[in-house]
Each structure stands twice: as C-alpha cells, then as structure tokens.
Image (cartoon, rainbow over all chains, first blue to last red; front, side):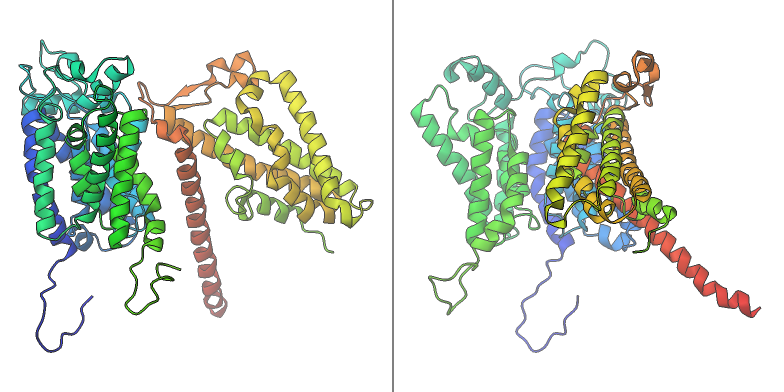
Length: 349
Length: 229
C-alpha cells in the first residue's frame, strides 16, 4: 500500500518483504557452504529440489486461489521455506523426500491458512516434522562428515542416488552414512556409557560433532549479520541459546559424564540454524520484546528436554512448533505498558 | 405439524444436513476410527443401525413419555440398543470389535443419536423416523467410508485391507494394492491425517454447493428470456 508523503525529513523505509528474504538467504550462505563442504553434494541436490517444489507449489496454490502469481512469488518467501527445509534434511535423502515435505509445507501449512502472514506455524518446520514422523528411516540418512577418511559422493553420483537410488559401483549406503553426534550420544548414554568415552570417537570435534560445529558456526555468523542489519531481533536467539546453555550447564555441572557440555548443545544439530533463522520467523514468532525472550527461552528449554529425555535426537522443529502455538498467548500477557498507563494493571488485561 | 417428505429427509441426511460434514456431530469416533476403509465401514454400519433403531423406538413411545423426563428415557433407549449391538459384534465380528474397541460402546454418547431423537424422532411418525435414521446414519457412514478410504489409500496405498474382519475369511483376498512398493505416508493414518482429510472433504462439499448454487441462479436468470422469446 502507498501512503502519500509529506514534508521532510524522511526515513527511507525500503525494506520490502522480498529484500528481507534475500538478505536472510544471503546470511544463510556461510552455513550452507560449511554444510556442503562437510556433508557433500546431497545438500545442494536437496536445496534445488525443495526450492523448486516450494516455488511450484506456491504458484499452483496462488493460481488456484485466484491470487496474483508472479507478484506474490517475487517476495521469495517460498524460496526461503524451501531452503530452510532442505538444510534440515539429511543429504542422502531420496528425491521425493524434499519434494513431499516442500509441497506439504507450502500447500497445507502456508496456503491453506491464507498464505504469507496468516500461517500460525512455521511452514518449513511443519514440512520437516511431517517427514520425520512419516518416514523415520529416510530421515536418518545423514552422510558421514568429510575428514574421517570416508568416501563422499560427487555431484553426479548424488543426483543419481537422489533421483534413481543408484550408488556408484563398490559403494554401500552403510559406508556413506553415519549416526549424527546427537544420535550417538543419546544411544550410548542410553546403554550406560560415559560421556568422556563416547566423545573420544573421531566423529566428535572440539565442541560438537566433527563438521557439525563448523556448520553451526556458519549459521552463527549469518545470524550475527542479520542482527547487525536489524533484520531479526536479538531477543529470540539470545533467549533460545541462553536457555539451552543455562540448563545444559546446570545438568552438566551435576554430572559431567551423563550430560553433554553446554557448548556441545549449542554447536550440535540445528541449534544455530533454529535460533537465528527458524525461530525468528516474523509471522509465527512472538512479537513483543519480553515475549520474544520468553518465546526463545521456551524453545531452548523444550529442545534440551527432547534431546536429553525425548524420543528424538534433536528437537528444534518440535520445540518451534510448540512455541508457535504458545506465541499468541505469550503476546497477550507481555504487551508493553503504554506510556501513562497504570503500571500495576498494565499488560494485556 | 406437517410431515416432511421422504425425499427431503433423504436429501437432508445424505447431503445438505449431513451429520459428518455439516452438523459436525460425532466427530470423535469419526476421526478416530476412519484410519482405513473397513474400520470406517464397521463403525458406520453400527452407528447407522443404532441410530435407526433408536429413532423408531423413540418415535413409537413419543406419545407416552412425559416431556420432563424425555432425555433420560432417550438415553436409556439408546444405551439398551447400543448394548445389544455391542454384544452382537462381540459375538459375531470379534476381530472388528477388538479393533474398534471403546468406540462401539461410545456410540451411546454420539450426539447424532440423542440429537435425532430429540429433534426429529420425538416429533414424527415411526415411518419417517425410520427413514431419517437410515439417511442420517447413511450420511455418517458415507463420510466414514470416504475418509477411511482416502486415509487408507494415501497412508498405505491399499483399499479394503483386513476386509476379512467384517466379511469372513473369503474376503482376505479383497485387498486392492493401488501402488506397488508404496512406502506409506504414515501421517495420513495418524490423527493429523484425519483432521486434514475431513477438512478437505468439507471444503470439497462447500465447493460443490457453491457450484450448484451458481448454476441454480443461472437458471433463474435464464427463465424470463426463454419466456419472452
């Protein structure tokens, strides 16, 4: 919508949705490069497939709903959904996996609710959770990180595996995949091993898993760029990572051999991706300042609970969706006090 | 009070006032048991039978029951009928009974039954109450079967799996495999699939209704032109 402008001075408000989305995509690049370096070309194949499927699904749904197709597609929010979903998927997934997830994310989680701005849940995470619940086996096919002396599939081999399920001669799927660090820690702790022994395995790095810590570091860099550019509020990532760090510190301090260190939690799985890129989705997150801190802290807490006592190795997606549900309530009770309003009776009532 | 025609009762029950799609009554069993076609059919038939029988009984005693105590009497009638159906299924369709479990006795609390008893059967003759029970039950059955079939096809790529639970050993081979080597889409069989599937079916019905209405308006507009020429 255009409003008539009057006299100067003016502040340039040129942040259109598409520009924000493009900057977020740019901020994802360091993490993406790390993921590609450590986990191979499968990441790229997933990115292409999920993005294409998201854009096509968005175009189809917009046409069916009688909305302007080209103008709405230009906001590139569908591209971002596809990219975030692809970055969460295992690199050795068959081609239909990112496509099914992307179509579900756009059609059911976004467009059926009314499109961008109306979806109560983060579409990429809905797509991810649908895949995780429906296809648990395919969702564990994480490639072993580079640096362990293992073979990695090249670009063409990755495409052949993704589309036709064919591996190059002499390679077995078992030789390419490796349980993720979070998964191994959970399994090994479950059978009573001690953390100091578990983390001696070569797939563990300085803080988190080998490769994983670099991927998370890449997302951290991108996230700091977003905060510097004021595209996201610092409160959600700080709340999320702070809560995760604090509760991990408490439990790690109580028993260093049964609970992983706080930095392991911060640099494992999807912690950084979730904190800076997924939980900060402006549509589905909390919008008040205090609410954002609470929203982030809630996610961090649930992630720790799922990682430590839950059935899945990582819990960013479930945590984000659960807190999406709570976001309207959080907003209701954390409305900032209006200047002049009675402080005691302020806040939402 | 004028009695509605049988055709309008049928149209109400099967389409325009369908208990599953329009009144949204009895959603708990509808969503919970429609994870495949045979389960949906089983619960749908049991509900239809209970609804028809309770409608007829309530209609027969409508002159005797005092209005102050009508609701407890209706509940007793419905409970007695459902108990008979439950014992019958326990005896003759034991496997299906075991799968549907608590949802068979829970037909007692299905709002459809008490709703039709209060809103229709207690005010109309037994013949009309019978047709109303059949049609309302049939509408519910139809939604259960369509939703169950949809979830079964999407969820595991088959139709009529486990038909032997209802039709005996001869039906073991009835299972239709629509897609070979289908990986299965578990979500459709889990509870979210029920909500999404029912939502899509309701949306489809609304689309069809809107089309029909548009066509009806079109005809009305066309009439004067035809008369003039």
